[in-house]
Image (cartoon, rainbow, N blue to C red; front, top):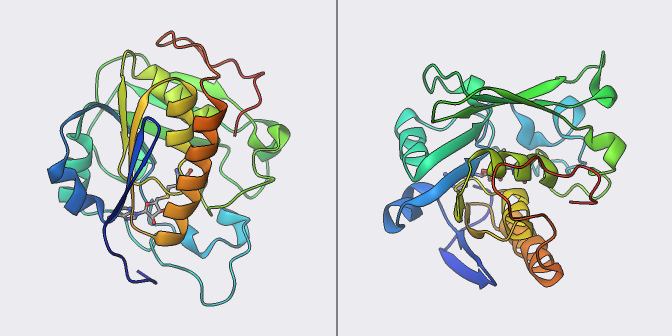
Length: 232
Ligand SMILES: C[S@@+](CC[C@H](N)C(=O)[O-])C[C@H]1O[C@@H](n2cnc3c(N)ncnc32)[C@H](O)[C@@H]1O
C-alpha cells in the first residue's frame, strides 16, 4: 500500500464503511445476505492509464493493488461472507464451474476497439446466466471517473437485483463505492471495505451523496434496473 492505513469505520445512513484490509475485517462481520464485489483482476489496471483505466494517475502514483489476484484463501473468505455472492472478474479466479454468470455487454462504445466488449461476474448459486447491455460511455458514467476500474452504478444495481431478496449487501473490495451507491439507491443496507485511504474517502463522499438523494430505484427484487434512470 502506498499510504499507512489504520482501521477506520464510518457510519453513513444505512452504510457502514471500513477502511482496512478485508481479510482483517471480514472475520468480525456477521454473514451478509449478498456479497457483490469486484476484486483486483491482476491485470495491472491500478496504473490507471492506457487501455484499462482511462484515468490520469500522476507518475509514481500507481498503488499497485492490481498486480495480482487475491489469494485463494481470501477469495474463499469473500465468497462465503454472504448467503450469495456475485464476483466480477469471476473468469480470472478459478471459483469453480457455474451456470450462473452475469455478462455485462459494454455496448457500442466498446465494439471493435482495444477494450474488452464485456465483463463476466461469477455467481455462487444456481440460476440462468443473464446479459445486460449497458454502454457507460453513451451514458456519460465515466465523465466523473474517480477510480481506475470504477464500475457503473447501474451495472452494480443489476447485480444486486440478480441476487434477489438481499437486504444487507457487502462489498469487501469497495474501491470508489459503486456497489454501495447502488445498494443505497435500491433501499438496501451496505457494508463496504476498502484498503486504500484515497478510494475510501471517495467512497464515503459518493455514498453520503447517495444517502442524501434517497432511494431512486424500485425496491422490487430481481426486477431489471430501469436503464433510463440517471445513475452514477
Ligand atoms: C477492482 S477495484 C474495485 C472498484 C470498484 N468496483 C469501483 O467501482 O470503484 C478493487 C479495489 O479493492 C481494493 N483492495 C485490494 N485488496 C484489498 C484488500 N485486501 N482489502 C480491501 N480492499 C482491497 C483496491 O484498493 C481497489 O480499490
